[in-house]
Length: 275
Ligand code: GLU
Image 1 (cartoon, rainbow, N blue to C red):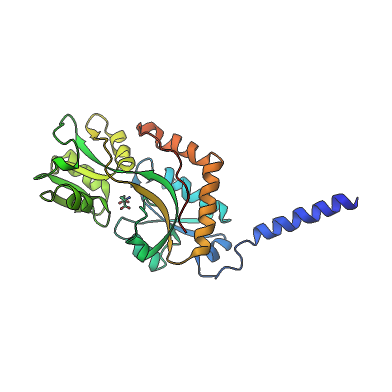
Image 2 (cartoon, protein in one colour; image 1 turned 120 degrees about the vertical axis):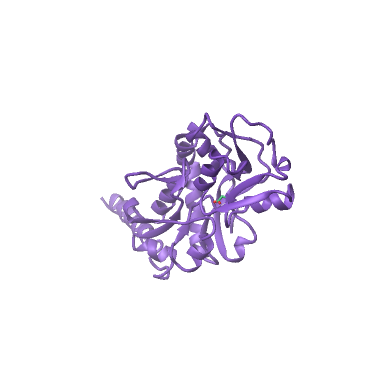
């Protein structure tokens, strides 16, 4: 039947166009790698609920789900993803050196970072907070930190923010990774740990009888997917993927599964505005 054949041809053409969506991208670009079915993603290994490598080498968490969803939308199957650890201090250089294609790692969009990298998103909004030991309640906010020892991670925005905005006399200790700060807090070597509330909530969930989130966020952190600076094609494709993750409900169900158990109050989805 001619009509059926016409419909079939249209569907087939549509599918072919879909498959070849990124095949004209530069071979050595993020979309070029994706067209070849492979992507290297910079991720954290030690942020429970967000992104964690399990003892048997699997990856779980909301950031991991975002990365898998985005990769899938770019045509990359889960086994085409190579996970690579990135840290707060190495995200920009991991992108500019080409070690990773994209970064999904609690990476706040900032104007300063945008001088070196581009972002898609945002895909999640949170705010900076404080983690303290139970049962102490003498730290009630960033302005109560003068003279205290505060731990955060080198290359992250939070510690600097406390010093410039609230408490100049804070003693700042910086480690490469957040679990080092949590260990120092549990051992009584520091008085508080500071970073984004959603990250801290994951550590509280691991030690609820020993740790407490102060729970008064004092900044807005908008998480973006880090891309090489000026890669507007990848940015558009990743923005579309994030919008789809939100509209299909995959975004919400990943948060319910990964972040919900910590008790962290889930926010509404952000509007994807990076361009
Ligand atoms: N979102 C903040 C940042 O991008 C803190 C979390 C982190 O260190 O990854 O610096």
